[in-house]
Figure 1: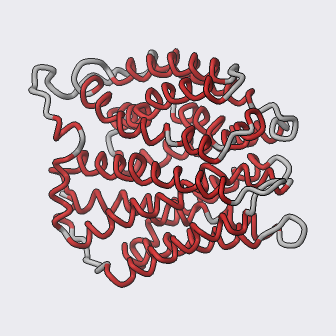
Figure 2 (figure 1 turned 90 degrees about the horizontal axis):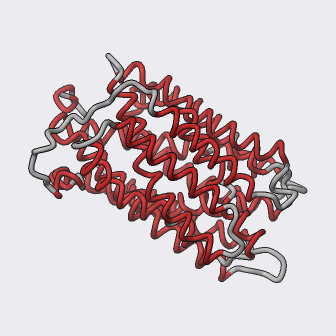
Figure 3 (figure 1 turned 60 degrees about the vertical axis):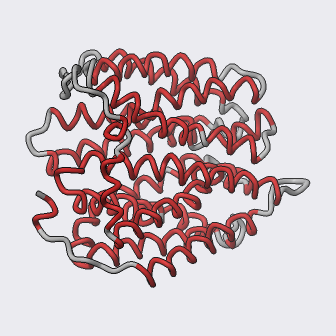
Length: 393
């Protein structure tokens, strides 16, 4: 389940920017529209989970239905001849897909006796699925042969397979009383707003939203950038970032214990600024190592800030607001932060367009400067408060 979930996402998401420019000569604004469907899906997901999966139907059945419909939408998206026809399909797909990220976790957690020990090994299969998708795209040469519409067909078939497979998963029945009065505040995780009274957590929360702006640049344009430079099988090379993610995920508990949350978060913030500097000044001819190092830094950038941030949120929230807090931070980052980032990135792509390609040095310098600015503000304002055992209870 976890392997297929992330194989499906990685099969088309990484290369969509390249596909849209190759197939439709799409502008940066159009790319932003396509990628921000993820943010729209993230904003709508709590309603689907809170109103349907939590109260009325078993999670595995909802997962199956969403993936079957989603598979059909992906198959249709790959057959469109212009962006205006393509967009409605990918928008509807992401509205259906984003809730499945919570559903696969719900199915997995419900079967475990000790999630803190068991979940990590299951979740790594999701990262492996993303890696395999990248290697398939690279080995088939779809980027070089301008055949990236096949990524949507591959993802669509995989989605249908997961949809059918989901009905065989262990029963994960609703855990809330369907007669319980629906509370919009609870569905959206707004109960966790109480955490923002804590100055340190408020600063972390704002920093997370701001950091999603440069994060959006990577998802939206990194594959397009590498293909414009002429890197062969760029999707396969980008899979090195997921290998890095696996490695640093294993190192994260040690780093948190040894250095604490503040230092770990700072390392993650620093990684984003350095990564985009490497992209800005790297080249295939003279300094390809800078490009590869920028890709490999993904593990530090993502794990040390966003994953450690999830742990920090869990520790701050405690048992009472645990689920609500995770829902709120996800809605704020994937919903609000990345939507802003996608639009800013799309605008810059159009502004720095050249007769042949783009001025990538100027494009990557902007999120690098922004990430360093966020880092400086975080260093000045964030106070590291030790988390005691009671905050986990």
